[in-house]
Length: 301
Image 1 (cartoon, rainbow, N blue to C red):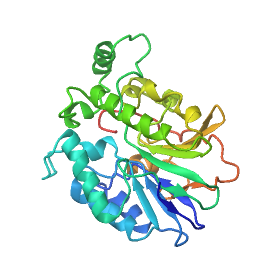
Image 2 (cartoon, one colour; image 1 turned 90 degrees about the horizontal axis):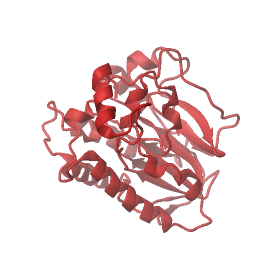
Image 3 (cartoon, helix red, strand yellow; image 1 turned 60 degrees about the vertical axis):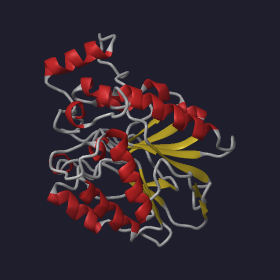
Image 4 (cartoon, rainbow, N blue to C red; image 1 turned 180 degrees about the horizontal axis):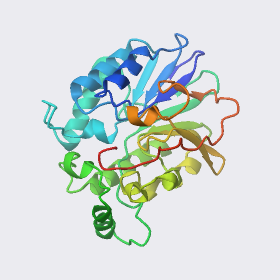
């Protein structure tokens, strides 16, 4: 396990979506408060490799350490991206890009945060989803997808996120969960963790979605007990575009999304504020969803 002692803060952000000029401007202004600050980037940086490189290279030049976990948009094979790799090959290409920049990925040893609020192993996660967060009244993936298509709320992953060489996205998810579970189980039994991925480990953050059928693309029931099993100090996630803090079994779940300009303009506060994970912010509580936020439209995630 890598270790970098020091002071500073462990910060996090996700869902930067820099294809929007307003969001790119937010990234240009994001800075650490000290030379010891780390930054977790929990997915959905952009849809093209060039944009992902720009963001991660920018952050790598500013923060002591940067960790990246992929989001679904990062893994899309988008028609506007000249890099046409699909599935595992695209993910591995992005891992190689990160290693070139000195950014840690889910494939690297988990670094040990020894600053304020530590020690804690910081683990970027790539787990995907397996359609197990089904809509009410649906018993199978097929029923869930039929219901979603009937409402018109279908994630663009169905057309742009390819699982190659796995037969399905849920097969890829199963492989990712099994490998990640093995690695987390090897950590010292007395060491707290910060688990940071694009999707929440438990379904409860999706309960406030305006379109509950979108939860199918938001995680897997296979990880529902990980916040207890792996001594989680904070579970960091994004994807829902509902930045807030919730608690489950005494464990803090922190969504760190920026989201789209049409969403963050409705919220009070600074949309580009980096969220402090360690040391924990005083008075952290469930801030809930901002009015008009909490969608899940096919074009939104």
